Image (tube, rainbow, N blue to C red):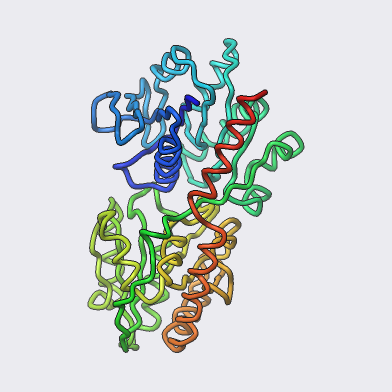
Length: 378
């Protein structure tokens, strides 16, 4: 089949939606599908290149704002090629509107989409999201054949509920996966008297919802303890403010900001940590690939009790769920992990087993392929 995935970001840019699309299209190409990706060109020029076995079209937006854009060339790409299926990853502001216009002008191609998350930002982005949510997204949902979601838990509480009667019958729950061969427990991990916490996430404004400031505040409340460290992996325009927060809280000697970790080094970062912390603050976090990767490495997770996220982390089994933004509750979970090394080790084993059973990319992509083929056979 000839398949086009349309997504706002794509590697080398690091972001959840782009990483999901990368894993999907790479595996679909290995299954001998003719796979294309359309994404925005940011600093680079527009280009069409074969990357691995996938043809990637990087399009300069005619109008752009942050990770949103209106790439008029996408219309030509969609109309000039005979794709069996177009797979749109939402949210993608600007492209929502482009598809809306294409449908109004008579485009009748087969369309599926993945609804990744709501956009909870404030200011201009919030206003754009609200307008698109009420005026554009319902029309796209009405037109699409299937809607993939990472969990029904998130779908029920997301903005999809606005069109629930129409969209429910189209929903396909397809949890994202992890490469269990790449992300695996390390046999050479040494035990330490110091509990090694790890945070992995973008430190830029687009990832404000990752909740690092909440984690730093919780750790500042146990600054009198010397039996913990925190490694922060990530980069972005907010990095300096987080570093200043750590200095002001007098915990900077035990908080190390290591910048962006390479793909090759990421499994090592998980493998040599004791607890992964995932303190996201709102529904902009819908799943948690990094929390899944950590668990695949046999590392328990402290995570916010958010819809979607709580399908990834099983409370009291593979980790601990805490109320979003609740510094006191997060602090208690951190202390519990420090004080119960044997129990957290057992959680890590449970986490690995659960990932192997429920969260693999092969399982996820098989669900996508079946939907594509069902559409193609109609």
